[in-house]
Image (cartoon, helix red, strand yellow):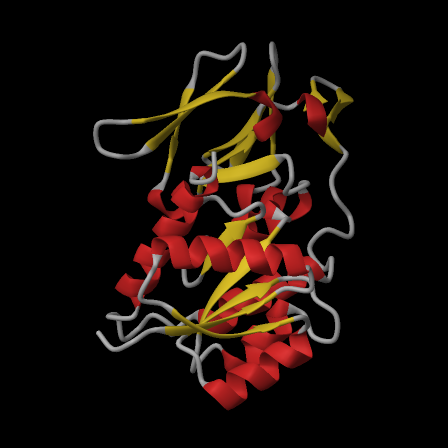
Length: 254
């Protein structure tokens, strides 16, 4: 493999220094071509110096990390640096790009580096990058969070009951319906898991399977099965929810 080059872009000097120090500590052969204080500098640096990898803070003056990635991701592998983990959780389901949460931890950084090296050998690595970046851009602009659900309406007999979403432990697809489960009760609604995923607060509700959304506030523990799948146990509930491989990245930072 040829010499790998990179740039770092973050409007916080301490964050840049910390990331650079951590990178060089665990990836000694990496050559850092420069550091940018904002998105405009990052864009020019990528254009002029042609790095293999760009570590981009998501929120920067001038241009955001997303805007820079939209323009340069085909020629440069992108790693987003963010303090807003739910942006990453929603946008990186297909793991087309990587992300690191602040503060940067050495163990997590090592995983990122290994992934970068692996992806460099895959020709289709960037094939769906535009879709991923567009989804993340929508999240940052609040397009998917303008009308978050606060209540779920359920029909019980001839009456309608309102359940606060923060009391709901999990949602689970059940044929044409979706089970709404609280600590001691459950009901059926016609709203799909896909619809709920778009309407619920992403900072509290994790979609862990195409059929399941759990309330992160009620997660008691996450374990790993013999086959490597994540297993989620919620407080006061006996069910064990399996995390599909597509959503396994949700718990990598835990």
